[in-house]
Image (cartoon, rainbow, N blue to C red):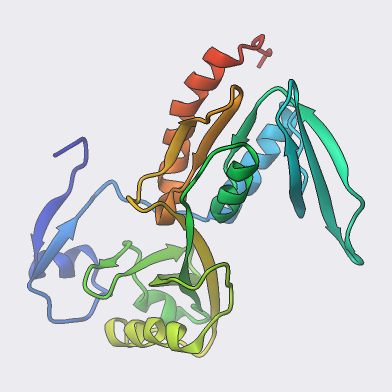
Length: 260
């Protein structure tokens, strides 16, 4: 155990015992028993519901167009609707936490900070395991192929997600076949009994910093904080960095504790 992480080398025979569904000529690998997987949509939806129960409000499909740095802050925004963007509205705030993914750079500029975040596009396919044989042939253990830079995640009995690649192409969400095809081919090679005739391709923008470390902490202006730039480890790191950031917020913007 190093740094609190139980990660140990395993032989080819041990790989076969840990995940029998994995096919290939392997020399060895590493195994992390504590590794786990989940459905990020369920997690974030549940988190939003918990925040709402405690008095939080969410504005979806909203674009921040201007921030006036005064006491309090004044944020002007527009909401996307059927005819385009709605008329501008404004809210006031004592403090601002910027956690806007790849768009954090633009918001930081409004607040007088330079945040060198760049969107790095990653791709995934979600394979529909639509029969018992495909379900039995797909792995339950999460896999990371270091050479191919591909990772997998089993999402319940009926879905198998395969993700990878890093594309530098600005704010572009186009799904390219030449990026999706290697994920399909990799799945067919290592899991030949998994049918790939029904897949859902996806592409998303990872907010990356040059040193691959997130920006967590205060901005230049009082009342401005950042929790962004987590790259491809957003869910992995978000709760931990939030716990770190809340200490700084509580010190600068103390509030009365609400009843549970």
